[in-house]
Image 1 (tube, rainbow, N blue to C red):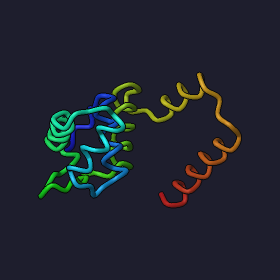
Image 2: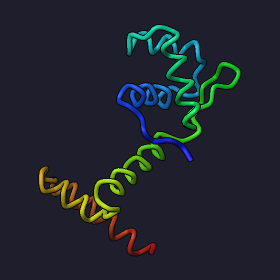
Image 3: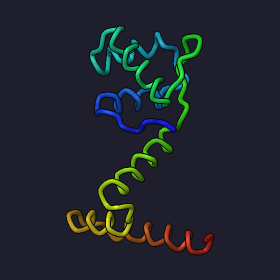
Length: 121
């Protein structure tokens, strides 16, 4: 099981890896220097921590993910709903739309997802 608890900076770094993988660790250092203003040791420290969390692997100087960006953010969303809304998706949706209106197009898209689930389920 991966540890989905990341700080904002670690998450930004993870997005860089996902957007560029597979990537040579030296190239990752260059990107982080440019985008995050990091020195080489900082990049390797954060990379090591995210490898320990089970997100990435640095093998022979090539960094790849062990979990996709989509799967990571899906797990993170599930965790938020579990922790903040006692696992209730309807409670989450109600809280979300009580503060931010959704467009008719978004409502239609959500309805299509529900209809598709009902057909498959």
